[in-house]
Length: 251
Ligand code: MF3
Ligand code: CO
Image (tube, rainbow, N blue to C red; front, top):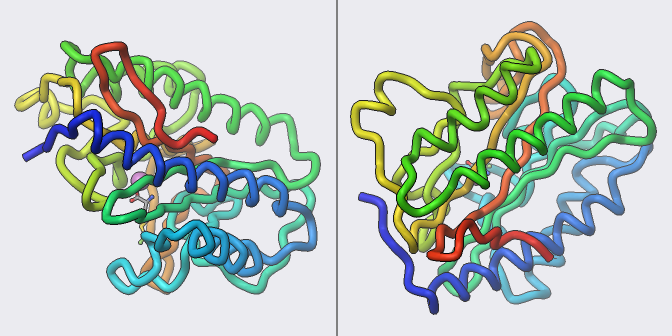
């Protein structure tokens, strides 16, 4: 059952989201050729704790880090490691914060140095798909409006929209009802939720250069594209209000 948050509760989620945004500023500064994703992870964990929060991912179902760092054909859930980022890579970074029992969750995809025109176009399409998904998160609309907005834009540009992983409600837990698919399906339309003020959703499109299909590496976590082509992932935590969508994970 999706839960609706009061304005006071949304303010607490906003404080968690502010820390998430600050982590993303730090990650954007650090994401350079020669840097190890595990160094980024360490600095982000320190920042979250300095702000009085807890890294939401660390220990979640046994996940071993505070961020997910997914490079190139890695879609999501890349585990930070000792490998150095290289010029031309694209890096998706995802981080969640628990502040006083309330969660925020956001992701960005960052170019490392200068990247190919194709990589840059994929990243820009992911942000535009997210923007359109957020725009569709309006009271009186339907949950499927979000997925439809993302999917029609992304597929219209020839990108694959990942289906295996979806967005989610968020609040006192990182993952709450409802699931927020980035595509429309008969299943979604069968019990299509009416969006109401107070719902808070993590909207997180994953766009692939090629096929939407994914597989999981043998470490049990890292999701990669089946065809080895690039993938981009961007995410915001968004509250549905009477005044329209409010992004909680901005600085
Ligand atoms: N942002 C991801 C999500 O929304 C969370 C990563 S899963 C974890 O599902 F295990 F890394 F925490
Ligand atoms: Co999420």
